[in-house]
Image (cartoon, rainbow over all chains, first blue to last red; front, side, top):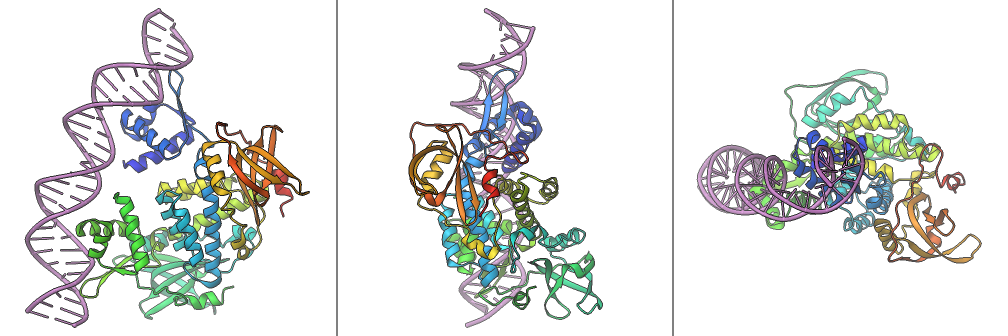
Length: 242
Length: 242
DNA sequence: TTTAATGGTGCCAAAAGTTGTCACCATTGA
DNA sequence: TCAATGGTGACAACTTTTGGCACCATTAAA
């Protein structure tokens, strides 16, 4: 087990069980007593507040208020920026406005690098169209749980995805594409794919897709999708956002 | 330089420069060619889409659409849930509805644990009131950058915070509180603090606070803020959300 | 008071992971 | 053809992580 994974396992275990002894934790994560003690020290170093009491009946306890103290201010800041950037993107579709970037750079100095990385990932993979009031976001579109397993595999393993598609006129066709992106234009979800037969990008409304299957034996390379300023393979889609 | 740090540096560099050769990267991050190639492989393994072309004029290029493949599906899911949960909280102020919790638990299996940890942190420290349409969120409230350093210290070190406060009627008073939470009710930010003099929680509009200082020598324990169902020290504030 | 359970520290050798060097291959454009 | 580029495998040097041990301090129960 990785050191990082183990740290997470320890935190999870403490969160779950409330109180645990070092030996119990060591047993649970499959490491030695000494290692767990070192992990605890490292976690404390990272800002986790872990109470400990020696003696019979003692043990370790994760302060339920932990988390908050370390990250609180920084995170609300970042969250505001996160949303701002998403909104800016939605408005003008600039991957990064200079402003947001500067803000993030400033914050970058106060946050641990992993957090920044995760936040940037968030920003990088979020494509949001014009949004209705936030209250409606709980209906950000049906999450098409039945379709997702096949999609996940196709995305992860870069395999062709084959599915039945019913177009706007109700015609049923069978399509096979290289999945390139997911796009949310609430309340609709789209799959953006490269259609090798038509040698072009195509977008598909998720709710019109059925029976997706991963095509075995295929393996594609990610297409180079130029993403500068307004050049975007689905810009047309964005303009007539519902 | 740490392996993790180096990975981040490489991604940043690629993001910035657009195209770079392995040797240039190696030079930049101060590692050998082989190591950078190993890093590239690791990053690809993590889901980054990095185009590469051998030969003269070739090089590495980070797909701006990267992140999509690995994290995309999961992250948009999570993001939707994140907002949903925040909205639910804002509406009924349930820290977790059973639904959202179940959704997160499901997703927990597909995401790397660090990401989950960060998301839970997000949720733990996010208090959002009723929100105007997302377009307006870029004006989610002024981020009171001048106040933040003192706040950060007070929160982190659990010290009393002393400041001048101008109340709704324009009266100027000097207050000293134990900072407990930040609250965003766009476009206003509030500090929720425990006022030892008045033995009660008090909330303060950030834009009415001036000259905050950390009181040396003080050290308080986090108050137990009952956060079950409707019991919340600032529920009154939420009801008359602007 | 004694005892067993608990957290905590320092030290060191073994184990595991990371890195650099080198040789070599494939592709590309000049 | 040639030089620039990405890519792979092997191996030794180096660095980090881990486990084991001895030992200390504290605590509650016997």
